[in-house]
Length: 130
Image (cartoon, rainbow, N blue to C red; front, side):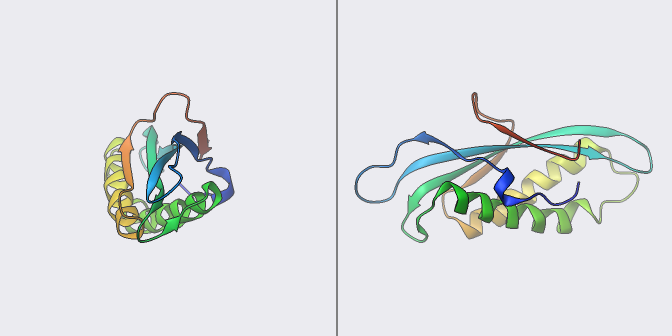
């Protein structure tokens, strides 16, 4: 899986932001095709990305900014987990390891964010690697 462009990720408001203070929730969905070039094993990796709209540490996080932050973290996780994966690694395992690394990296960048396997209903998918 190559890196993706931040503008491609489309964060959608799931919980509206209150008028004052940290609040609100936005989500995006990454649908990435992981293919082992040695074995030709492939797996569609569906990753749900959730981020506060506003928190104490980062302040207001606009959807475009959430996309940029998530993309930076995705690219870091790809470099740490996907690119160095051994040729014998099943694509589904690489997907799960990628999700875990992405979750850790994003959580350090934006407190309260989370990454999970699967996406919420009605969240637009950003497809990469197809």
